[in-house]
Amino acid sequence: MFVRYLAGEGEKMLWEDESPKVFQKIEKAPYFQRCIYLYPERNERPPVWLWVVGHEKADPTKAEYNRVWRTRLVLHFCVKGKGYYNGELITPGTAFLSWPMMPHSMVADPDDPFEYYWVMVRGEDTVPFAKQMGFSATNLIFPCDYLNEVVPLLEHYIDMDHTKISLAEYTDSLMRMVFSCQKKKKGEVPEPSKRNSANYTHYVELSKHFLYDNNFAVSVQEVAEMLGVSPKHFNRIFHDVVGVPPKQYITEQRLELGVTLLKNGMSPVEVSNVLRYTDYAMFYRAFKKRYGVPPSKFDSQKHTD
Image 1: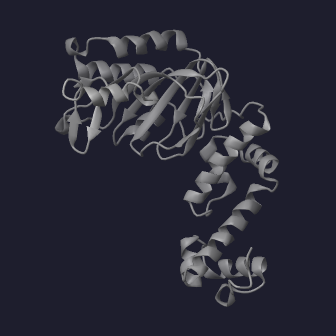
Image 2: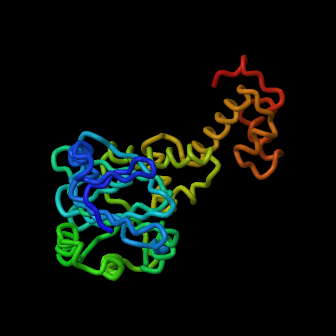
Image 3: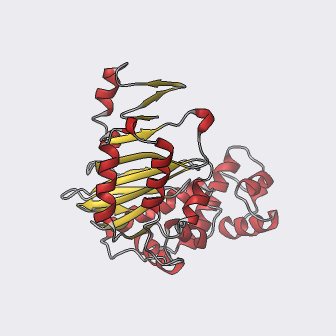
């Protein structure tokens, strides 16, 4: 079934003719303007299906930091204005992905906020489907040379009378048409465009969110892959903004988190496990080198750094 401006309240779905106030509010929200949703019956939901198609303009007053669920993927097409996605400049003709479970940031240019169409697929086979269509978590931003074909298609989809078509066949074919238009070379990872220091900051802040969520127990390589850039480029922009290389920052933040956990009563071995050191000896050596004493002898009253 298709529905416009659908809102969920627990297991109950609120329809437009049942709750006008809900939809009056939703129509003013940036993520519910000109959207069409597909909700198959619960016992008929396919392993991956086209869930939402929308058209909106980014809010220049608000920077967004978010991540999509593990069974969802969003493909965006910029058609007007400009902004920054994961710190990289987005202009008309650019497409960008929100990959399942990966944090991302979106910032609109205050003078010319970007406008875009977006398509979300959903289901347990979302990631296998995306990979089958040529997408990957390491190439989230790329030029899109088929806007003239895809935008009229999405406009038609949003505005059409969905009661007069075969929903299952139409949504499957549309989903594959939109996602099969990916023109990038397999394995190609574009470096972000030149940007000023403020835009670098948005990019680095995203990496910090990712590091924090993983207790700073990830490598520079893993962070670079999450951002879709090379480790060399990530090292350069991180050092430009923070003043230290990312490896040094990760080590220091990891140990500072360890200090916090020790102050909260956790044992050194427990802290080592939480910070995901491969063995306690490695944590012991790193901690003693940083603070001059082993974790078991740490006195929080004497160390305030």
